[in-house]
Image (cartoon, rainbow, N blue to C red; front, side, top):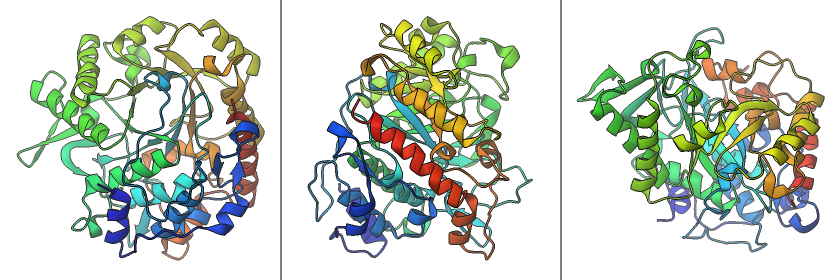
Length: 440
């Protein structure tokens, strides 16, 4: 099914695409052999978020790496092929789709449509490794899904509801009679793949931060309950069957009771062997051998994570010291199934780094190796490409859901959520780094 066309029709748009000559003119290009890889740099997100979905799809079609302009979106889209082990080398860029959703009259919705609009501003994958867009939210959160709250009121994404409809924050339920929530998610994945990007989703696995809906009632999740475990597996399988190919697993370091003195989640985690079984079941039921399972945090016990079934781990080395990153890449170049990664920032980032420090970390993530095939995975947040306004930060937006609108409109929220002139200049500088990396 051509979900992109279904989405356009549901939005009362025609499916005939039009070349966007202005975007074609201003687009950044990869340098050298990667010249055909294009994206919109030197922007702030509101430049794209204020557009219609049809306009965004026109831009995505215009920036086709093949150079072919498709007047109708293709019926068959496949994920960019970087082999089964692509996740070992990838850059993961997490987009808080709730923060960029439509906010109207105290409600939040349609985050997946905003994420689609932002795709044209995400640098495409390089010759040797993939870029993967991770969505912060797909399932309902349990602290006030669909509601905007004040900047000091908790409305955390770190609590999810399974076996229930997908999040009202993310899905456009006003068109659900024309295109299902599942098709809306698949349209995002198809458009990401067309852009040369992989797609994934973040979620928590701390039992007391999960509710599961059974017979219409919410109960606290229990990893010892076989029914709950089966629901978790099935929920992950459904998303992968829609085109997502990466799971970002919060608190994965602590699975099986490892290093729990530093565990900050709430509730039990799966046992080690249990998680091995779960990840194997997800691979088996989807028939996918190319999935990437990313575990939040890592340690130097790499074999523990590899044997668990993970592909990459975060928070092992920051990118401040380029030479340390390059030497770690050299040390681990023979580990092809799992590697710890370089962080620019993570979901707990509360601000404080200068633009120069952030750009230096991006530089280390993109170039910290002797050979591109030995690259370590890299981890970035939305704010590492599109800086946020001065009085908020990544973690604050994970924990709360405020509107920054000054006139009640979503456009004002988008304009004021992000840094303005300095944010545009920073995005240009980050884009220049990616331009030189894409030929690697």
